[in-house]
Image (cartoon, rainbow, N blue to C red; front, side):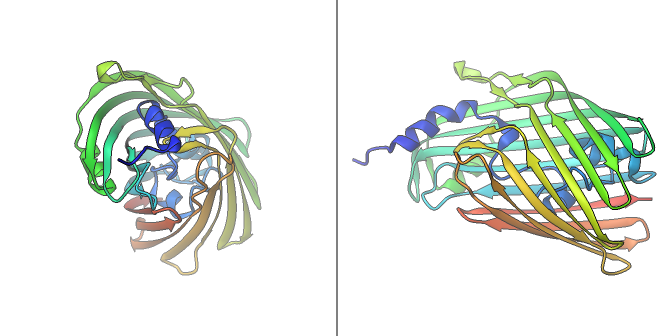
Length: 326
């Protein structure tokens, strides 16, 4: 009989209480942001600012509508811990006000490592966020914004499952669980200059907790603080870097991510972007990931976006979306 490793036992104990906000595959919201590997806090200038930096609406588009979806999975060579997440975003943004709905789904499968996991704990958290964003300009270059949210979290856990990591993650997507509704808020500050932009975002300000059935520990969305700086290299190109101030819990340890990305506008209708991110906490598996993305203007202000990413230890991700911006 195979003896479970110490690392597997630790992961199994942590599985019911992992904090969905800090999944090792990165933020699942925003196709354009994912194409830059998350180096987006100081760059965002469309309706996805309701998530990435509410204060950025003040210096962004006069009106924008964003609809997009990302899917990400990380299955290591040993098969455990396997994790995945997805994000759906629908948002409307104007300089003083934003409206949004986004849904994030976090899933994990933790069991005895192998091609087929045995005795696995499968967990899922689906969080529905409905928000209103209010923005206040403090000066011509500085603005602060807050997204007030009603969050409905659905937690589901199943023990003793067996199957391939991919099949167990699929099964986690279909789990039904207990729902809890909480109030929360995100706050963002944006400083806009001619060559340099900077931003700071604090998410999950009230750290909402969601109950789990069967006496399992509740799942909490941990507070996150993230800063970013962007430098304009030319009218068509800019580079950006983001970094987290706080560590976040994941199924394979604690993470504190940093990211570097670039975005360019080489043609009248074409935008391209890319980036990479890595863990700076030194606790969880490093899992450095890289991503690329592109956008194309179909009809004037209607823009389609796509991104794809990959990395070590079985990480894969992709996303598609559309924006209406003017």
